[in-house]
View (tube, rainbow, N blue to C red):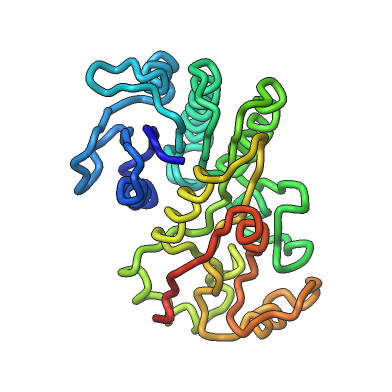
Length: 284
């Protein structure tokens, strides 16, 4: 599947890689953000996604000279983490913006929606230990912040939107901490204190692999709501995953034999269903 696709949050750390990747794979991309996308020379619309009228125009292909109606929407726009602004402001931006995108897509007859959920729904920052590792999509969300609460509500919204409209395909990607190659210079310093990165079980996602996950989600055939953890196949640490668990989370059940640096954020479902296959690692 290729065609017209709207990408919100296109100027963000992941968004700017996603628009380039989709364009390189034949998609006709309309980038949307409040600020211009660095290095992007394709179609762009500046918009406030908390304004439903603006969102509906964009998703309907009704912005002058920025049509046609898209075949898909990739929704990445959000206040990207807890604590950046007051909690009430995070909720007031993220929750309405996502509802606006979901409802506009349904109203416009756009049946494919991929959006950025978050690893935080798994219980980050794991001040309370995870129930088991590798963590996966099989236990109920445990939001510990307003940001994470909104992501949890988005996943439930998607479930109900798909119940209302069985033609919808809505895929939530629980992205780990997004990294660029230039961020990797810092990784060796994490070894000095394994607790420094325990908050997300030492996980990360290379932005290029995050973009791959978005593209594979757009290509996925099927309807209904699905969520996937999207991380790289290894951790940010030089130490083995088993030794990290033994030191930091000694009482947590380990449900499989772990590879030396194997991610503790399970990507098995994404591999199996989407064909997701991480291609990048900080170790190279």
